Image (cartoon, rainbow, N blue to C red):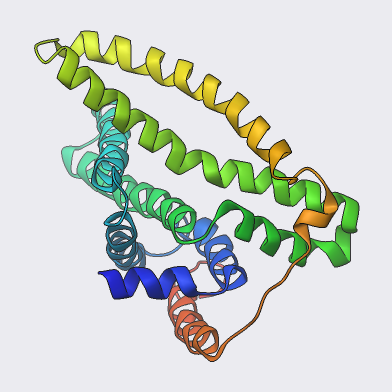
Length: 241
């Protein structure tokens, strides 16, 4: 697990970002078998990356609970509308696989590369088209957005843990009332902390977003493997098959 995590973290952020940008939309268009393979592969990667995090296991479990909730909502609405049980089960399974793969993709990207590294990759890609001024602003926006996902999951895990210790006998409905309010309040405070951190580290200017990448042989080998995998996935896309 540690070797896999080190390998993924050491890859060039441009390779990881490009793969994620292609794979994200493709997850809703590819066949269910390909989506299932992607979900299993991403689960292994996220498990390796999260194993070194203090609340990594809780983050992954919280993400899966989110998937189960929306799958249950879809299944309930389909059942109420009068669909056959076989169709309800098939639709719920399809949504579970694709939604889980999509969330795992975003979490793996956030855990494997720093927000600034991903921002630098975006600035490198869009600078020839958008210009230097727009490139660094877009890079900063993406960096903050990518940093928000693991921060939100970690905040939820911390609040659930604190509530379980301070009020171990509180019921389900009380937890569902207290936890969202506490999460929104904590994230509001973290937003101000993020603003101060960006200004204090000098990330609010173009000089902090000058790309400084170095492509290695390991990146080339992983790019070839990822390219072959993406070609296999592309065979199931409706507009390419």
